[in-house]
Length: 153
Image (cartoon, rainbow, N blue to C red; front, side):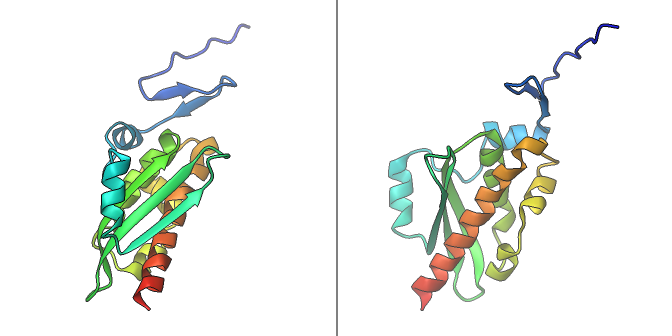
C-alpha cells in the first residue's frame, strides 16, 4: 500500500529530512512580528548605553547568538523593559519575543525562574527538534540579570 503524504497546512514546515514541524499561530506571530526586538545595530548600541543589564549567549560558530537588554525599576527590582537582538532561527526568535513580553513587570527573582518549558508552553509548543532554541532566551535573560546585579554592587 502506497503511503500518501498529507499536504502541509499553513503552519507546517517540512524539515530537510522530510520531517513535519508544526508551528503554532503564536510562534508564527512572534516570528513574523517579533516584540521588543531592535531593528538596527545603531538602535541597540544607543539602548545599551542606558540599559541596566546586558546578557549575551550563544556563538556565531553554532549559528545562534542572543543578546538581551533589561531596564529595572530599582525600587521594586522589577523589569521595566526587555529588549533583544538575535541571529537565530524561527524558534529562537519567537521564544525570545514571547519571553521579552512575559518578563515585563516581573521581579528579577521571578524572571530568573522562568524555564525553557515555560516559554514553550507560552508559545503553544515547538517542534521537538527546536525546543533547544528556547534555551537561548532564558540564558540571555539570566545573564542580563546577573550583569545588572554586578553593576549594582
